[in-house]
Image (cartoon, rainbow over all chains, first blue to last red; front, side, top):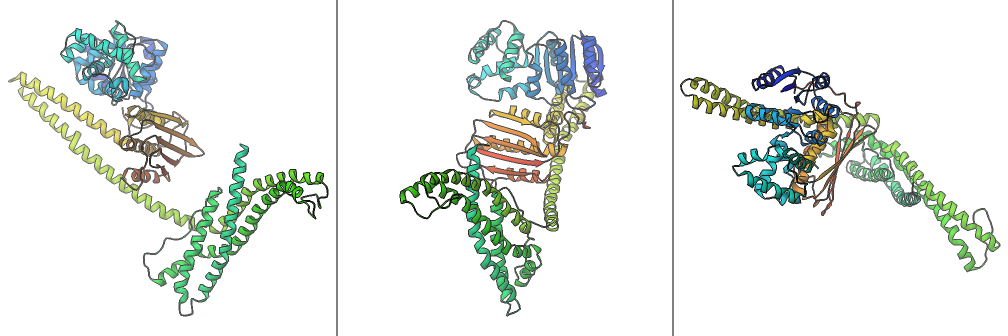
Length: 212
Length: 426
C-alpha cells in the first residue's frame, strides 16, 4: 500500500516511516511543510495519506486544509489526520463531504502500534477512524434522542463512531455479533437514521448525526 | 430613522431640559456657599470645616451634571484626585484647595447655571408654544373671539385665520422637539469644557489606573507561571521519571524474564500516554492550540461545540487579533461560558463576537435563571482583571429570572486575515 506522510518533526516523520514500512506500507513521499503537501498528494495519489494538522510555515492548520483540498480534488482520497489535540470542529470539517476514507486521531495513538496500523488500513479501505476523545465529546451532549439510548447502546454507538465494524465491536465489548446487530438496529430506530447493510455507510450516518 | 424615535428623543431631551433648569437653580446657592466658606477660612478656621462640606455638595452637583450629559451622548470623566488617607482637616483642606478640578467646578457654577436655565427654558418653551398653537384653535372657537393671535397671524380675526395656527403650531412643535436634543448637547458640551479632566489630570488618572492594572497583571501572571511549574513538576515530569525507571527495569529483565519485561513495557506505554494527556490539558490552559490555529472565532466555535448546552456562535471578526489580546478575549469568553454551564441552568446560549471601530465586542447571553452577581465568586472578577490589562471592560445584566447578558469590550486592532505566523511547534 502506498502512503504519503506529512510531518514537520524529523523524529516523528522517521518514526512513522519506519513503523509503516515495518507493516508493508510503501512510503512514496514524506513531506515536512504545508505548501508541498497538496502537490505531493495529487502527484502520488497514495492509497492513504498520514497528515499532521499543524505544519510550517504558519504552524496553524495547513495540514488539515491540504487534506480537505486534496479530497475536493480527488473525492474520497483516504486521509488520516494526526494532531496533538483533537477538536470536534475539525472532525466536522473533515467529514463534511460525507465520503469515507477519513481518519482523525491523536498522535498518542501511534504508540498502540497494532491499533494504529489497523486504523490506517481501515481508512485506506474507505472506512473511518475517529479518536475516542472526539467521539466522547460528540456524545457528551445529552439531548433527548441520545438520552433515550441505554448504556450498552451508547457504548456500541461510541465504538461505531470510532469506525469499528460489527465484528470488532463484538470483540471489544465481549458480546456476540448478533447482539451488536440488535443494538445497532435499536440505535438506528431511536435516532431515526436510514438503515444500511454497509459498515462504512452506517458509521458515516452515525457521525453525520452526531456532528449535526 | 423611525419618526417615533426622534419624537421620543425630543420628549426625553425636553424632560432633560426641565431637569437641567431645576439643577441649574441650585448652582447659585452653591456658588454663594463656596465663596463664603473661602472667605471664612481665615476667620476662626470655620472654612476649614465648611469648605470640604461645600465641595462635597458641589462635586455631587457636578456628578449629576456629568450623568445628565452622559444620557445625552456626552460622557464626561471624573477629574478629581484620589482622597488622601488621612482624615485630618488640614490635609483634606489642602487636598481640595490644590486640586485644579475644585476650581474648575467652581468656575463652572455660574456659566453652568446660566446655560442650564436659558437652554432648558428654550427647549421647553418652543414645544409648549407649538402645543398652544395646536390646541388654540378649538379653544379660541370655544371661548369666542378676543384679542388673540398666533405665530405670523396677529391678531386672529376670522375662523379662517384661526385654522392657520394649527399647521404653524405643528411645525413649531416639531422644530422644538427636533431642536431639544441639540440644546441638551450644547449644555453638555459646556459642562464638558469645565467638568472634564484636563489633559494633565487625564494623564494622572491614566497613570494611576495603569499602575493598578499592571500590578494585577503581573500578579496574575506570576501565579499562572507558578501553577504551570507545579503542574509540570508533579505531572508530566514525574511521569517521565517513572517512565525512565520502568523502561530501565524492563531492559534488565529482557533476558531473564521476558514476560515480565513485556508487561513493564506495556506499563511504560500507559505512563507515556498519561503524560501526554496531562501535557495536553496544560497546553490547553496556557494557549489552546485551536486558538493558535483558527483565531478567536474558530476557537470560540470549537469551545461552543464542546459545551453541554446548545450554543450558537455569531461572529464578524474579519482578521486576526494580536496574540495576547486574542488570548485574553478567548479566556474571558471561556470563563463566562464556564460560569453559564455551572450556574445558569440555561437551555440555550448565544455568543456574539464583532469588531468595529477598533473595538472588539463579545456578548454572551443565556436564557437561564439570572441573578448572577459580579461581587460573588472570583470568576467574573478574574475576567474583569484579564480584560483590564488591555483596557477592556465587562458589564453584566442579570435580573432574577434571567436572561443574563455579559458584554465585554476590548479595544484592539485587527491584522489582515490568515497571516499570523506563530513560532509554535506542532
